[in-house]
Amino acid sequence: FVRRFPRELPRSAEDELRTLGREAFGPLLSRPGAWAFWWPRFERIAAWFVAEERGRRASLAESLVETGGRLVLSLPAGSFTITAVADRIDRLASGDLAITDYKTGGVPQKQEIDAAIAVQLPLEGAIAEAGGFEIAAAPVAALEYWRLGGGNPAGTRLPLSDDPGALIARVVAEIGDFIARYDDPATPYRIVPRIRWAPRFSDYAHLERREEDEDEW
Image 1: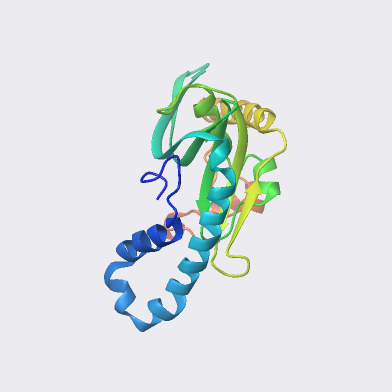
Image 2: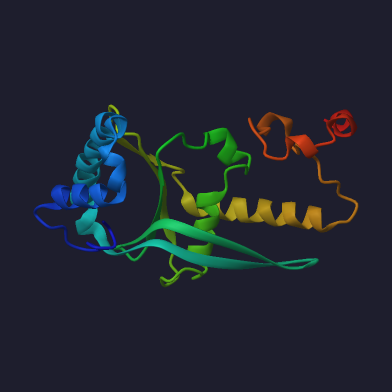
């Protein structure tokens, strides 16, 4: 929808978005469960999304969606390349950038962001500030999750930080330290590096030698 209407919205914006939704759902809409449960949620999301877009389009100069980028970090053991695909990057009328990540489920908790566990958006911000996406480099003024659940409310905008620049700088520094630590051959690769942030499910659990690693937790 944003790719089709990157600047001005049509009068029938909500209808246009619903049409795109029907195309995306395709044959699934013939299933009673999808029609009764998921489609009404999508319609509520569409109404919320269009209202948000109408309220902010005047402050946007351009928008990119699903754009890839990369950032090369120079570290003691050599270069390390970080790649990302940003859901959306907006250039504001001020010239600054706003980066949005859409979520249909949960969003990272503040503790995960502060502990440099959930680093996706700050790293996308670092790539953007370095000119690593298909948009000119500029300061990042906003990092936001848009949670699209379709309930009540249908959507929520969740800013990551009041100071995105400081968050980006801190995360890049911590990631650099993390990579440098694992560049050291003496650093072990733990099954669960931080037990507090252990994943609820792992595809590799059957390969984990937990008895040997638990003593180090």
